[in-house]
Amino acid sequence: MALRGYKVIEFAGLAPGPFCGMILRDHGASVIRVDKPFTMPNVDSLGRGKRSLVVDFKKPASSQILTKLCSNADVLIDPFRPGVMEKFNLGPSDLCEVNPKLIYARLTGFGQNGPFSKMAGHDINYIAISGVLSVLGGKKPQPPINLMGDFAGGGLICALGICLALLERHKSGKGQVIDANMVEGSAYVSSWLWTTRSKSFPYPLWPNPTGKNILDGGAHFYQTYETKDKKFMAVGALELPFYDTFVKGMDLTSSDNPQELNVSKTHEKLANAFLTKTQEEWCKIFDLTDACVTPVVPIEEAHKHPHNAHNQSFLQKDGKIVPIPAPRLSRTPAEPCLRDPYPGEHTQEILLEAGFKENEIQSFIEDKTVYWEPVKSSL
Image (cartoon, rainbow, N blue to C red; front, side):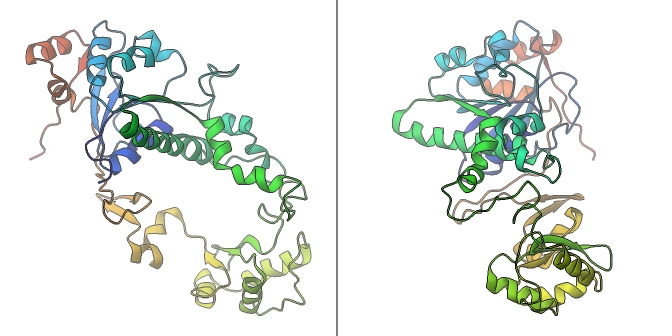
């Protein structure tokens, strides 16, 4: 695996931080998740293959433990607001002095600086500030769940930053601090929006209000349609040759149904036509053609679709179904472990590896600086 041998310390959080750590772990890194006391098992649902250490930050010895843990780590993932880690003497100035090779990744919503930097927020707030939310939705802005900020602009961009910093470290031998924030990350992921909305862009993709353009709902040829059996088909017939194939499959003609925006009659005609057949019947017409028409597959059934099944695009274990890591690497492929750690399961093991003596660890357990919950065998 590409990241085998790298040691990552992930301070527990929700969504972007765990996703970032999961990416690194899937590709071979050893990831230790630092949990807080009384954390619920599987709280982030993205802990697969990680190990868990429970530390109470309020205890005086916690700083000593975590500093020692980070002294030989390659990466630290900090999901807290600016200033939180500094309160516990675990900020970049503290840990990077002890370990100059440390990649210190700070993953926040608003970033380390600016008037909003210490303000609370969620995915919807970050993409709202980034400008991206303003062009999503129809009559009013509609968030794409929390995929844009938390996962694309947050966890994925942070993982990219970590990999870039690790690559650069091979040249300089030095670590560095990464400011990965979801405002800038979601904007960067959406760079194409800024480019195509520019007046200098040769083709007007966004001449109309939101919801009335080619890619946001204003085109009958880039739309979803309900079928006879209450399922849906997705149409993406943007280019003229694909559009011609599409209307022929619908038993219509391009001349009677021109490829124009916001033509309500054509949209209504297509909507009524799709209602005459089931999704399976439409798939028999459009599968393996260049009409750019595909079924809208429910998330629970995506692993069963013939294309995904052929490529083994999903992993299944103990009733759990998850996507395989992407992208695929030919020589050093990812090898994900689907088991989530129980909070505190590896506390003793991790501290022993860090160089603490058994009597020291027992003392930490007794004064509740750390918690150890060994998983009992079910045999």
